[in-house]
Image (cartoon, rainbow, N blue to C red; front, top):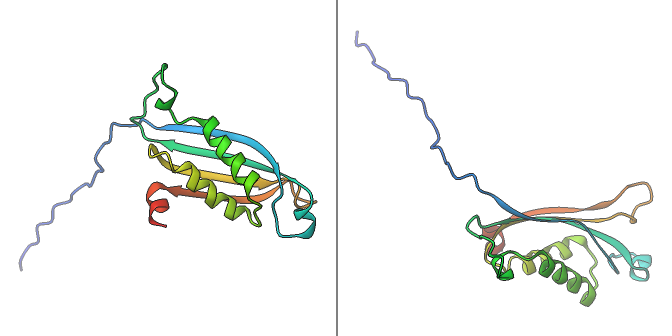
Length: 142
């Protein structure tokens, strides 16, 4: 009888010593605009709350003398305000998609998580909304 010689191998993932992660946060940013499909939503402005986490390329280093060396959250906020100022949305999902388009214009951004809520839409709920996460490859592939 032939004896099988098996060798047990332990598989280890390569250790990645690079643990740098840079994020830009926008928390509880509020805009009051017309949004929704119901008749009353087309008449009265509603509170819309944005929470956004933007993963930035780890090689993006700040230069104190150059604001363009960072992903500027003020520019992002201005873009979000302009989206709702010049377009009436029926769905938060559509607003989220347009927000991705605006934010991903900065090529230093790797991924974005957007949560948009309407706190006054449903009487018995603190808020309703959507949350979407996209990598740059998801965005560029769509």
